[in-house]
Amino acid sequence: MFKDESFDVIVIGAGIGGTICAALLSQAGFKTLILEKNAQVGGACSSYYKEGFIIDQACHIIPVGLKGIFGKVLKRCGLQNLKFSTGIATNSAIRLINTDYIKMGVSENEERSPEEAQENLKLLGFTSEEQEEMLKVSFKLLGISKRKIRQMLDEKVSLYTFLDSLTESDRIKSFLSWFDGLMFVIPPRLTSAGEFLRSYQEMMIKNDTSYPIGGCIAIPSAFVEGIKKFGGTVLTNTKVKQIVIENDRATGVELEDGTRIDSRIIISNLNIKQTIQTLVGPKYFENSYLNKVNNLKESWSSIVLKIALDKIIIPNFSSVHLFNVDDFTSQLKSIDEAYDAVERGEIPDKPAFMVPIPSNIDSNLAPPGKQLLICGSIGPPTREKQNWDPWIKKYYESILEFHPEIDDHKIFMDVSTPSPTTGKIEVTTNFSIFTGNCSVEGTALTQDQSGKYRISSQLPIDNLFVVGDSAGTDTHGIGTQIAADSGFKCAEFLINKYKLEKKIV
Ligand SMILES: Cc1cc2nc3c(=O)[nH]c(=O)nc-3n(C[C@H](O)[C@H](O)[C@H](O)COP(=O)(O)OP(=O)(O)OC[C@H]3O[C@@H](n4cnc5c(N)ncnc54)[C@H](O)[C@@H]3O)c2cc1C
Image (cartoon, rainbow, N blue to C red; front, side):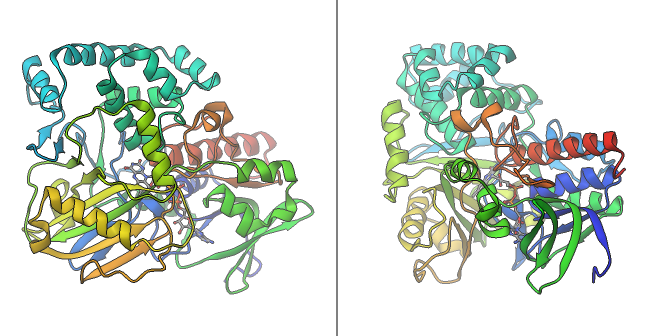
């Protein structure tokens, strides 16, 4: 197919980082080819169709929609095809095991008195002193300057240390650690306080927590439209077998069927570890670099139960958060220990769930009168093949403790697990498993892996780059945001480089 044809850029993988990078490079005039092994684009941020439902591959709330990096790239590429439903956080609710749903925020056209806000905190177990303190802490978090945040990133301050100095209230510390878990899926002792504050402030100030109309796949699909609009080529069902290295330079790729395609620049959207181990081969790298990459820490993973229902069981809310604890009383140390136990493979006794309800946000994502619940909870940081049945069983039973009626109204349940399973699933009938999402964030936002310490997108081989949530010095944000930022910054780098050298554009 590509006989005698060569490209300026080949991007391997059409995840968020890959599609954004390819769209920007196409727009800048680079002759771009993007190759995706799956039938559909999007990677972890994809969706598929089943029995009238459009189902997300993983479990997503987009921290900042059009007011953030996605809006910036869409504007630059002149794309108007991606619409977000906003106010997802303000239309979310928390439920502890024996309570009703407690709505977390208010949208622009609603009003809530300070007394009502305090009443909500009271329902979560906050004493009146803790409610006052929470208010002060919220202002403090928003008031920390950019300079101070940069300093905390540079000094590798952990969230644990920061929270300990912020307040004496265990309840507030554990409330903020829960938020940290939703954002970065790592324990407070590992989280970069600077990165936490940066993302927290952006979310609170921009107030643009969103969900894409059409399901998560709408995001990468919008950028695919951009690639095509500027003359780029997008091929799905096309797996790259290896990156060709000649004279210490990346010069092309070889597909599974043996086809070779030449390109001046190769950008991999696979995790940096997989890129090196499976696409390039470790022999091309010095040991010190290999050690550095092998020691990169991924975040914990998520096991996602995607439950299609024949009736609407949870009306009104865009997303809900389910807890099996009756208040936020854990100390920071025991929160860290709970993560350690999951890492050892121990299934949490009382798992919590983040449950976006896509069909409440966009009614086209489920047939009329039916509902889709996407229930995500923590899993260990692993790529090892293992039997996930006990996790799935425990998590499904835990969800039923909140909503027993789910069992009677379930049409089917699909599950995403962090790695392939060796077991036979017997939890329910009508049950499919999708695997391979691995960690939530490819390179976790720890103190050692944030800001200027984050590993570069540029590999120590000429013309070879990695974009996505695993690489990119000084890239920031949660999951999809950092993957997007990485694709954006890599494209900017290449555009500037080749404009100066007048080699390509
Ligand atoms: C369970 C879960 C829940 C999450 N929740 C959230 C959330 O609520 N909010 C949020 O912002 N983020 C969330 N994230 C994180 C977010 O989804 C990811 O950070 C982001 O989507 C990763 O994008 P990426 O660019 O790194 O590429 P990936 O999604 O990793 O995509 C890589 C692409 O490369 C393709 N590929 C792999 N090998 C080859 C090959 N050999 N040849 C060709 N193609 C190949 C893959 O098929 C894939 O399409 C979640 C992630 C998970 C797993």
